[in-house]
Length: 187
Ligand SMILES: [Zn+2]
Ligand SMILES: [Zn+2]
Image (cartoon, rainbow, N blue to C red):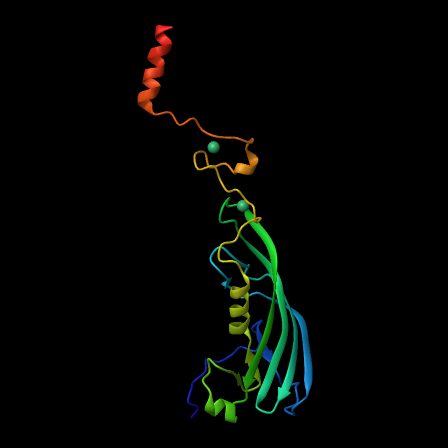
């Protein structure tokens, strides 16, 4: 019995890599260049890769004595909302991944925790957690449409950069307003 019971990986999942073609001989190499569709929840609350968007994988799989080293880049579009003016953001993200996945029953498998070193499940590698971590790290927690976005007018909610310079609202205390009406009547 394995000491951990992994959930079964679906080889058709976009971020599951099949290493059957990679000889288990240290130094053997395979490259993976392809587009896959992004899984859900890839990103943060205000900004992320839309589900189903094209993620481009450009990866190198290398056999090492204890497993497979995956390195390369993943890039894809991101959409979100500016935290200051709420306008939509359309951008892209490129992340670098470098992860070792240990063979089942290798020394690494027996001597490390799964959260330290990933695991192969049979011939399959689940790249999704590594990609998810990298994407989340690469995205801003407070996304803005541009660095100097002035945000919204606190009174009318219109983006300040769409308003004329010096836009402000008269802050008239109702009591003063009554008084100024009075003065006007006297004139
Ligand atoms: Zn903005
Ligand atoms: Zn205003």
